[in-house]
Length: 82
Image (cartoon, rainbow, N blue to C red; front, side):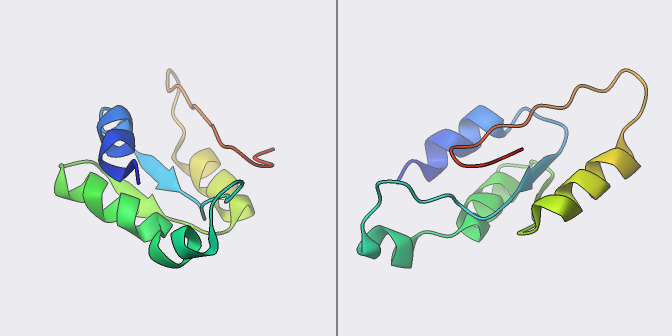
């Protein structure tokens, strides 16, 4: 739906890790036609470093492993992203 717009907004980041999409008000049809991999593919096609990771715990581990002094980490989501 807003895949290109989201990719443009995120594309400037050094690395993007995308979990599963949190569907809040979406229809069953929306859910059947949208996947996080679609966003990752669009980001990568735009030259971004994006990966799909469905497990939030694995994302946290990956970020902690890759984090270097001076890095800034931004998390955001529509669901429980703690």
